[in-house]
Image (cartoon, helix red, strand yellow):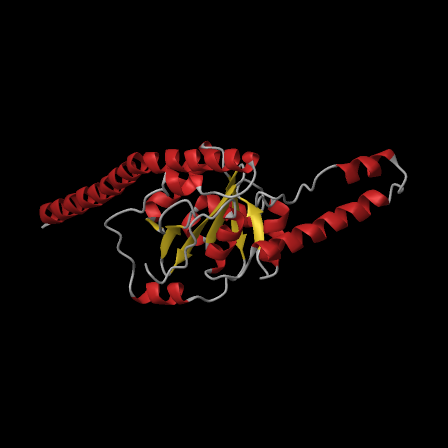
Amino acid sequence: MEAIFHEKQEGSLCAQHCLNALLQGQYFSPTDLADIASQLDEQERQQMAEAGLQSEAYRRFLEQPSSNYDDSGFFSVQVIDNAVRVWALELVPYNSKNPVARNARQDPTQQKAYICNFREHWLTIRKLGYQWFNLNSLLTGPELISDTYLNMFLTQLQEEGYSIFVVNGELPECEADELLKVIPAVQPIKPRLITEKAANKMEGTEEGDEDYQLALAESKHLVENDDRALQKALQMSMEENLTEEEMLKEAIAMSMQNE
């Protein structure tokens, strides 16, 4: 578990933490993401300018704040999408008709990673080795997720209001992926949600504070629901095993009768 790159929440920089968790390294800084956002703003300005520099629509556009980032550390989905494209990756909406999304809904474990968004908060769920991990920066560390539980967790996130994107493409090689293929992770104790005290150290505007607290509260709600969902997943797994055992017993009994 120590080999997994995990950034804990700083300010409202969850977009940065999410991307670095996905790529498993310090690949993006706030400055990098701000540069991407500025480029998107300029592209939007040029498109609006086509209607005329003196047009009312263009003047209104110039008066509005950026829709791609702000001083609190917020970055739009367009910024995240352009950031992953640097690595030849693509974000595919989980509920779309895209074949990648359809395959993900049929069997989420066959994908490599998911990026999830709720209000201003971003988090990554990624496969490392042959196991899945919740790399939410609001947790004290990576959370191991079983294959059985992954589908339920994604469903739970959607019910809680998260937008989910399938990460399509080849992720860069990382130490954790190679190590966990040889030595799978064991996690007897789940990571905790970061403390309220840590949350109060958040930097940014009052609006950013409010958005952060909303994301924190939502993550807390998810953590509280984890145990119930996990118990359900375990029960389902036990029922499947029981069914297989019953079928085996029946086959043995039939074999003995035939003898």
